[in-house]
Length: 167
Image 1 (tube, helix red, strand yellow):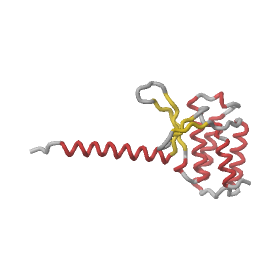
Image 2 (cartoon, rainbow, N blue to C red):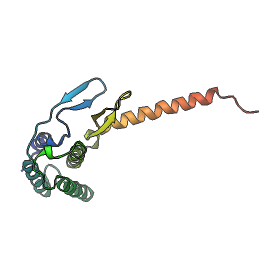
Image 3 (cartoon, helix red, strand yellow):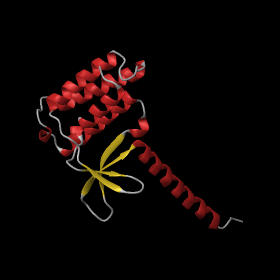
Image 4 (cartoon, rainbow, N blue to C red):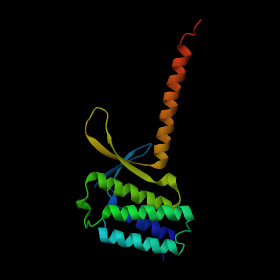
C-alpha cells in the first residue's frame, strides 16, 4: 500500500482540482505563484478509491471513527460534485474552488494536521471590482483573523481612553 510520504506526494500531484491554472499563495514574507500539475478526472476518482482502500487498511495512519465519517462525507461530496464530468474544463470557477477546498479538507483529515490545510476563496482587491483567487493555509487565516481582532480591539480601547467620563 502507501507509505505516508508517497501518499502525501500523490495528494499533491492530484491537485488538478486547484481551481485556477495559477494560484496565488500568500505567505507572510512573499507572494508565490504555483501551477498545479493536472491529472484527469478518472485518475482522480481512481486515486480517491485507492486512498479509501488504503485507509481501510490503516495507511498512512489509523483514522478514528469521527475522522472516518469526515473522510466518507468529503469523498462523497467530491464524487457528487464531479458527477459525470470528464474534464476539469467542464467546471466553472466556483466549482473548481469548491473541488479544491474539498480536496484540501480530505487531505487534512488523512494527514491529521488542520493547520496545513489550504483554503482558496475569491476576494476583491481594495479599489477594484475584479475578483482574484487567494489561497492561504488555515494557520495563516487564523493568524490574519487574530491580528485583525487585536487591531480592532486596540482601536476600541484607544477610543475609550480618550472619551470623557460623564459627570
